[in-house]
Every structure is written in structure tokens, then in C-alpha cells.
Image 1 (cartoon, rainbow, N blue to C red):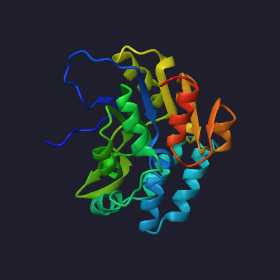
Image 2: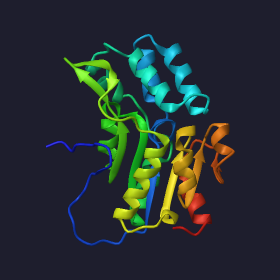
Image 3: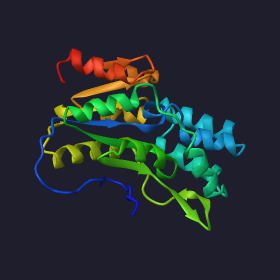
Image 4: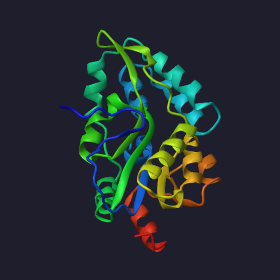
Length: 232
């Protein structure tokens, strides 16, 4: 049976006691993967210019993320679900992503994904990295086509922050033991709440409000940073 990834879902709930040293919470689009998934889908169906403009406005903090997302999703009304699933196979990991998560697991970290992206586009990535927690949006589907709506509440900046704190609480960790990585304005509350919040190849509005910055598109630089801070 396939695992079901839903809001605030703990993927592995097998019970028992284990040592957990920390929690890493990553954004997905333009962080764990190179692309903005919804922009790629829009390009595929001839809506690139309109959707990309709305994405930029949200990521730069010039437009409310929820309003931007509703408009973007509405522009994709009628797209066949198979088109989404086919495109999900083409998304690519950011350099160093797999290595970083593997090394952090060896250091007894749990992995959470808090993303404004869409579950239907993440399936291959999630199957590869097997996160412990996932928070993401989801397209509403009817008759195998996108309806132009979401099928659950929008993942907001606040809900990303709340999810990370909830996951940490379940793991008996403090906020100081959270490492968070993101690039957009909707990641700012999460990055500011985490003990170590990292703006990764981020928009200026994010860099201006977060202590730690990584400008090279290689997630193994996160490992170097954590080593320099004696967190691993």
C-alpha cells in the first residue's frame, strides 16, 4: 500500500524509543529540488508567463502567498492529472540534497518537508528521500483533471512554522534543535523560529531577515555550516 502524505502527517509511526538529535525542515521547490514545480507545469501547458509572475511576486513578498497560489492554481484548471505526474518524473534534486539528508540521518536527525508545492508533483522525490514528516499543498482532482482549486487549506508561512514546532514537540526536541532551509518569503517565520534558519540561494527579502545565508546552489554547504557551528 502506498504511503499517504497529508498535512502534518508523520510518515513513520512505528512506535518505540529512539535517539533523535535534531530535526531538519526543508522547503521543496528551489531548495530541495532545482525547479519551481508549478512554474514547470505552467510552462508545459502554455501558462508560463502568467504563473511565473505570480510565483515571483509571492516569493519576493510583494503578494500574499495564498492569494498568489489560488490564482496560479486557477490558471491550471483543466490540466490532465497524467501531465502533472509525467512532469513530476522530470524534477531534479539540488546538488548535494541526497548526500546532506543521508548524512543527517546518520547523525540521528529526522527529516521534514514543509512546502508550498504540490503532493502530486512530489511523489518521486518523496519516494527517494522518505521524509519523516510532510506538509504540502494538493490539487483538487475531478475526472482526472485539475479543477483549478486546492483540496485542503493552503500551506502558509504560519502553517510551515507551526508544523515544524509540532514535529519537534512530537520528537521531544526544542525549537533550537530545528534546522530549517528555505528560499522564499513564505519561509521566513519558519527560518526565524528554527535554532538554525538558513536562507538558501534566497530572495533578498529573506536574506535580510535571516542570520545564515548560503549563496552556492549546493546543499552540502549546509553540512559545512552545521559542522562550523558544532551542531554535528
